[in-house]
Image (cartoon, rainbow, N blue to C red; front, side, top):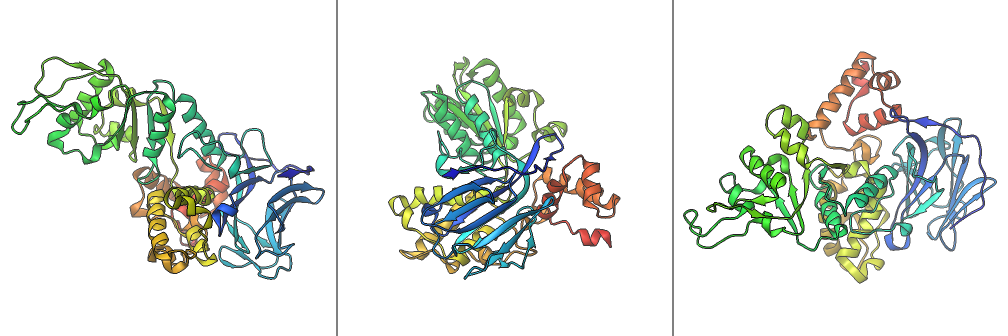
Length: 469
């Protein structure tokens, strides 16, 4: 709950597109997730945050600033302070019994905070963001339990992603096509299923993995065939498109669909009909089309590997799902949801050791939510009825990250980045080289906020020291 109110001098930051950027503190993760739901705290107008133990979770704005009380028995009653110093922020242990840690290391007195830093106190982890877009209405504290989730997959504490999901909900009951972009494993099919569940359509949700369709069988798989149409066609086959009649056709990895099949799919979208193999008359269908891809479809059109007219047909609303390393603020939220789905009634009793929680928050998750899900699957089995410990996590998750320890510093190596990210990395490198490694000058040249360029430098593992040398 939130009580009281006071304001102090407002520090304004703006993104390149003019949006207000505000400092935030996130309650990321408690070692018993059900007992410590995540929360988002807006820090604009606040000079100090005090964190300590209390009988129940409380958020109160007082004359001294924001007071956060958490029922974590390993917290001291007055554990740590986060203070604004001019335009920056710093943390300070307030004489706690168990100490305060910054990115896995003991925090020094008045340790300065950088964007994406992870703060650890007791068995609770916090995340600091120097400047992100604030949610509409500027609510001081927003807790995960306040999230209204009309369909699985549409929950987030990140205001920018929250706005994206609101657009998804607004368009769900229309016939507007949607393209969901994002790396493999980010949950694109879950978002598509959410759109279908909110659409009110009575037909089935039919998912098609375009990358897995055999090139010689694409049309027969998608559009079906008539008995005797070719050798082995022993019976009539409806096909995947007609299986979605009255419902939703989800074309996953549409960028991998062969050009010949793209032309046939275009007919379906234009005429609302399919021509099964071996038939002379088309069959009418009523489908809502959703598509997903990890590729840059505009670049594929330029390279003549994707039809521009098909892209024009499928592109209505474009939704981008960020990789998990860019939404560390949602990690506790996602773990909570996955545990509820997998452990059901036992979810509220599952605990993590501090070392395991630290490893989960420090890992870069190159394979995204899918990798997190498999990690928890294994850990639940190995832990049995006890807490999930470091030894129950996969070896790659147990390894400490290189660098300062922030998850945003442990993204995939450059050669594993998607095509669009590789191009962006080269643009940032060119700008840094042109300005001798100066981030402020490079950000100005790129037309981006300095904090955003710093995040990209960590994400893309760019060595500024080498550039300066």
